[in-house]
Length: 142
Ligand SMILES: [Zn+2]
Image 1 (tube, rainbow, N blue to C red):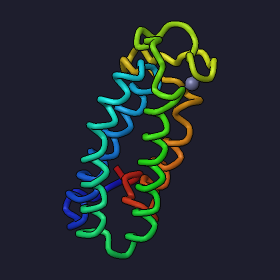
Image 2: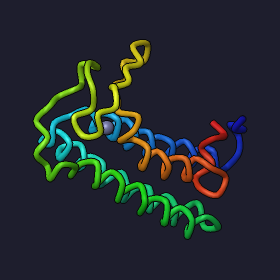
Image 3: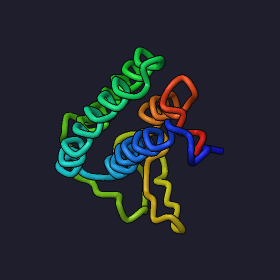
Image 4: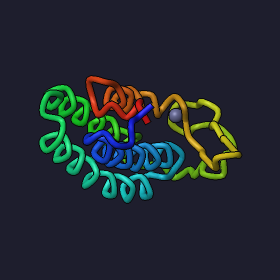
């Protein structure tokens, strides 16, 4: 549990907001046509930049680990955006059917209105988990 009076708390919340901003877009990308993926990627890039700035400013001890994880996250999101050579026309944001890329049934968490391909999301979620850890932004504390 994060202590709300700890001096690092605002920075951990900021990092969490940036990470979630990318994660939500990544999940959305994994069920969207390529044109939408490209738009979502463009929205993610400044979030990665800000993650790196937050790391340099407030997470000095964790900087090497965090920067490597952010690089991994960005590479995974770029790969997701460019899957099938940017030729994906299928739209699975309705939560129905299977992923046009990997064939995995689409996951739809109705309660949270979250639609995603669990298989295509694995590479970026691996990087997300690293940032979430104590070696990263420690957002697991929230
Ligand atoms: Zn997939």
